[in-house]
Length: 83
Image (cartoon, rainbow, N blue to C red):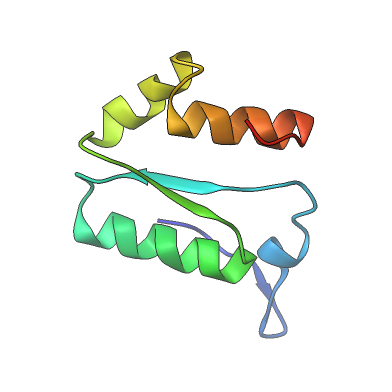
Protein backbone atom coordinates (compact mmCIF):
# COMPACT_ATOMS: atom_id res chain seq x y z
CA UNK A 1 0.00 0.00 0.00
CA UNK A 2 1.35 3.41 -0.94
CA UNK A 3 1.12 6.09 1.71
CA UNK A 4 0.56 9.58 0.44
CA UNK A 5 1.12 12.65 2.55
CA UNK A 6 -1.68 15.17 2.33
CA UNK A 7 -1.47 18.79 3.46
CA UNK A 8 -4.57 20.93 3.09
CA UNK A 9 -6.08 18.30 0.81
CA UNK A 10 -3.09 18.30 -1.56
CA UNK A 11 -0.98 15.20 -2.23
CA UNK A 12 2.54 16.40 -1.42
CA UNK A 13 4.25 13.02 -1.82
CA UNK A 14 4.03 12.78 -5.59
CA UNK A 15 4.48 16.52 -6.03
CA UNK A 16 7.95 16.25 -4.49
CA UNK A 17 9.18 13.42 -6.71
CA UNK A 18 11.95 14.78 -8.90
CA UNK A 19 13.71 11.61 -10.04
CA UNK A 20 12.75 9.27 -12.86
CA UNK A 21 10.35 6.56 -11.70
CA UNK A 22 9.09 3.38 -13.30
CA UNK A 23 6.50 1.50 -11.28
CA UNK A 24 6.90 -2.25 -11.61
CA UNK A 25 4.99 -5.19 -10.21
CA UNK A 26 4.72 -8.90 -10.88
CA UNK A 27 2.06 -10.51 -13.02
CA UNK A 28 1.26 -12.87 -10.15
CA UNK A 29 0.61 -10.10 -7.61
CA UNK A 30 -2.71 -9.81 -5.86
CA UNK A 31 -5.31 -7.76 -7.69
CA UNK A 32 -5.16 -5.13 -4.95
CA UNK A 33 -1.38 -4.76 -5.14
CA UNK A 34 -1.60 -4.39 -8.93
CA UNK A 35 -4.39 -1.81 -8.57
CA UNK A 36 -2.36 0.24 -6.09
CA UNK A 37 0.71 0.07 -8.32
CA UNK A 38 -1.28 1.27 -11.34
CA UNK A 39 -2.80 4.09 -9.29
CA UNK A 40 0.62 5.20 -8.07
CA UNK A 41 2.06 5.13 -11.62
CA UNK A 42 -0.87 7.15 -12.92
CA UNK A 43 -0.45 9.72 -10.14
CA UNK A 44 3.22 10.09 -11.07
CA UNK A 45 2.51 9.83 -14.81
CA UNK A 46 5.26 7.22 -14.72
CA UNK A 47 5.85 4.28 -17.02
CA UNK A 48 4.62 0.92 -15.78
CA UNK A 49 6.19 -2.51 -16.09
CA UNK A 50 4.56 -5.84 -15.30
CA UNK A 51 6.96 -8.74 -14.72
CA UNK A 52 5.46 -11.51 -16.86
CA UNK A 53 5.16 -14.93 -15.29
CA UNK A 54 6.79 -14.00 -11.98
CA UNK A 55 5.61 -13.43 -8.44
CA UNK A 56 6.25 -10.69 -5.87
CA UNK A 57 9.64 -12.10 -4.85
CA UNK A 58 10.86 -13.15 -8.28
CA UNK A 59 10.25 -9.81 -10.00
CA UNK A 60 13.04 -8.13 -8.03
CA UNK A 61 15.42 -10.97 -8.86
CA UNK A 62 15.10 -10.10 -12.56
CA UNK A 63 17.21 -7.01 -11.85
CA UNK A 64 20.25 -9.30 -11.58
CA UNK A 65 19.99 -10.10 -15.30
CA UNK A 66 20.98 -7.04 -17.36
CA UNK A 67 19.06 -8.51 -20.32
CA UNK A 68 15.73 -8.60 -18.47
CA UNK A 69 13.15 -5.95 -19.31
CA UNK A 70 13.10 -4.57 -15.75
CA UNK A 71 16.89 -4.36 -15.54
CA UNK A 72 17.01 -2.58 -18.91
CA UNK A 73 14.43 -0.05 -17.67
CA UNK A 74 16.46 0.56 -14.51
CA UNK A 75 19.69 1.01 -16.46
CA UNK A 76 17.97 3.39 -18.88
CA UNK A 77 16.84 5.53 -15.95
CA UNK A 78 20.40 5.59 -14.58
CA UNK A 79 22.14 6.63 -17.77
CA UNK A 80 19.14 8.10 -19.61
CA UNK A 81 19.93 6.01 -22.69
CA UNK A 82 17.62 3.48 -24.36
CA UNK A 83 18.93 -0.11 -24.24
